[in-house]
Length: 401
Length: 171
Image 1 (cartoon, rainbow over the protein chains, first blue to last red):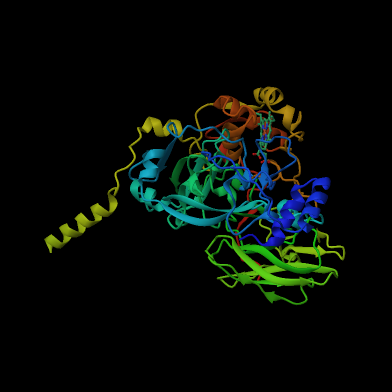
Image 2 (image 1 turned 90 degrees about the vertical axis):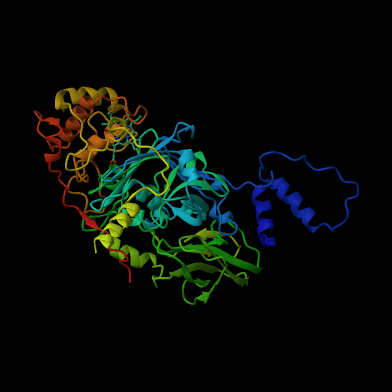
């Protein structure tokens, strides 16, 4: 069920000024039977959403759109799943067009039996389906600086949540006979730049998937079709897409995307390397930047997630962090997946500031911006997970703080 | 006793043998063709060599349009400069100021550059353009010749600048 205020908001966003005025009139018109009715559209082989829905991924203003990103419209998100068509993207050399019949995955290096798998081979093996968030470690990076982004999509849209289906990597590594001396796995994609990342074998033997399915169908090309690494709870970049090779190694590759990029520069000039885990984060998605509120009842709703496991608690403040109330956590609550939280609220029409703060199953509490910047300064670029605030002005407009 | 040893040996053999038998064994040549990756100790670096002068020519023709005539940046990131800025309010992260390993330059340029034509440089050309970028960054002298032996020996200015992940750091 979509809450009624959301439907109104969707129509508001989707309409032109004239259309909005008209639909506002229509909404006030008495409900009446409209008489004879036309038949609806015929059945069709592959579905599309309603023409009245307009939520879109947001493109970045980048020089090269092959080395770019798009953001999920979290402000308009419903439930915990992101439609595959709205899942955020980050590519380094474009989305390759791969015929699954031609694609191969090579596992080699410190293994007893190097193996080549076809996509068909992978799909024959025992698979599991799991709901997990995926988040770029650059997500909400604008919050480090003095100019945080205006909407939930702009600030936090490099995070999405899908059901992923794949073969446990541990199964493939056992099949290849991984050796004791192997400490690292070097994973490489089949994109034009053959993007490469290293991850510890311990994680590879734990919960990593070689995924081929997303939300009930094969992966989308922009999510790595036909095969990707899925590394639950860890930064997006290590979830190598278009996976073509895994090398078991005694050392990491020290590739460009784990040295020059995706390392966190500290105020003393040192940089943290292999900062894989995405720590607990939450944000209010409704109301959020760009919304316009009317006084009266309004359900506050948002998303929380943690790379360390389950979300145990989400607190919401409507008075800039002076007082907090526990939000209800919607089931299912799953480890390393989005958790939807909700809190009923009556907006009295006076200025308010909304914040959310989550706690995960390890007891880790989402920090404030100040706690983070005192420790890490302003130039670490990645892994920002501070509390996000939205200001509700007396006229109902919602803006970033 | 002998039987027990035999049984244990059989169990170990079962544990190590493939359970599903799916997938095929690649030839050593296939693995070689598929698996370029150059790491800090030099493993994976191919044969060939290159020096600064031809590297400059390659850079001018194939790189400068995006990275600037002397690697100072343009449409794409600067590759040199910024040394000594990492602990300031305006840190500039470049190959010169930030990258811990010279082998990463070879690995990355071979796999990913030029951005619009990745995979079009020969190994000699990649060694040469790597030499030129490192020369621009005042890391190697003008007469440097790079190959699989000399490249891993280069000590980058920020070699010791990286620390392991201490998180959770907020408590």
